[in-house]
Amino acid sequence: MADEVAGESPAGWVGPRVVVPAHGRRTVAWRQTHRGGTVDDRTLGEVTVSIPPQVAGLDPRVPNDLLAECDLAVRAIARLDETGGEHLRPLATLLLRAESVASSKIEHEDASIEDFARALHGVKANSSATSMVAASGAMDRLLHGPIEAAGITAAHRLLLSDDPTERAYAGRWRKMQNWIGGSDHSPRNALYVPPPPDLVEELMGDLITFARRTDLPVIAQAAIAHAQFESIHPFTDGNGRIGRALAAAVIRERRVAQHVVIPIASALVARREHYFGTLDRYRDGDAGPIVHAFARSAIIASEEATITAGRLAAMPDQWHGLAGAPRVGSAAAQVLASLPSSPIFTADDIENRLGLSTAATYRAIERLAGAEVIRPLTTRTRNQIWGTGDLLDELHDLGVRIGARSAELLAAPAGAAGGGGRSTVLQAAALDARRSTPLPGEVPPAEGIDHSPGAPGR
Image (spheres, rainbow, N blue to C red):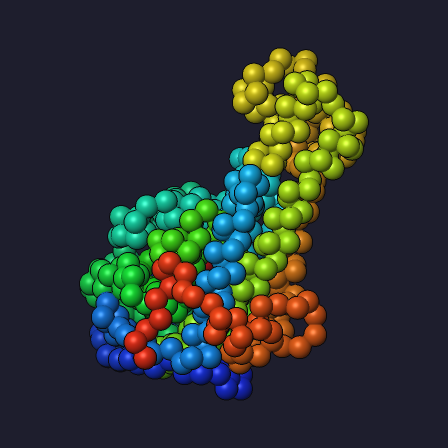
């Protein structure tokens, strides 16, 4: 079964190399289990698989210019995580959703923010939006707990337990051969064939040991852990989304970001083929491109999320004014106060959460809707789902801003700011790296598709 189509190598990459062991190759027997495809698919008798190296004891030597950019990424993440203040909870919720949406878009799961909001509240009319909600739950599960096999498989179970073709495999290491690209019916002409299933458990144990180390530069560790996960491809489907969630879990476990998720995928999706190309380079023995992509994506995403944090902080006062300054303790004031943490709701939600009467709830909703603080998300006349317009629009705009900057900056070598546009910490990389002291958790080193029964590429 095939997963996402592999990407092109990063065109003209001239950035620093991070030498890692190249993947090995092995020829194994192959036999089609379900008849399909051409005679060449049906008669294929062997396939060359990739054998990822063991990484538990890997000591990647990150060149100084790339290490400086990794350090800047850590500082940008930590700064955002530490300065959220009272607005940290709604920011954390919004960023988790932003990352889940973008991670799903990499796998061609696309839906509007309104579709996503409706799916959060149980509307399953849009399968891509439902998939995005599942990805959000999976990432949240992986972030809350140590990095271990049970947590990874539990996250995968949340991701695919409602998928009609994949639920039988949800939360289990694969027991079949998968591949990327080529035919849908056999690994013939595949672009990448992961290791055979009998190696998955051992390789994942080795990867988990690597992901839990505390003696590596955090961004390099997260990027390499992600690339290794994608190379192992331990599940029949959903590998991309769980693999990107694993990178976020590494950053969380190293205590760089203890409260927020940095929407790195929002940057990666802007240059999807470049991102897939960095995985190819990793398999060839160079982790430099994937580490660079993660460092730069983290910087861009953190800076834009900081802008979002400022906007979130200003919203409650703006809503208060738009709603005509409802008196303290009134139903409208209570609903307003709940919007940052619960921006999508029904009337029943308000009644249950705030203990308001039905009449008071509907009066408050009518007042806030009339002031255009909230807007209806369905065409229903009963059981309407309401969304906080400014928050939903900011969730969309955050992804647009990150994507616009990333389209230019991701391909530039480490240390190059990419010219033009908003001033970023990238433009002061060398100076900032020399003047800064390490943050906790950032320890410089000494020197096609799973063609399982599932949809492509998730």
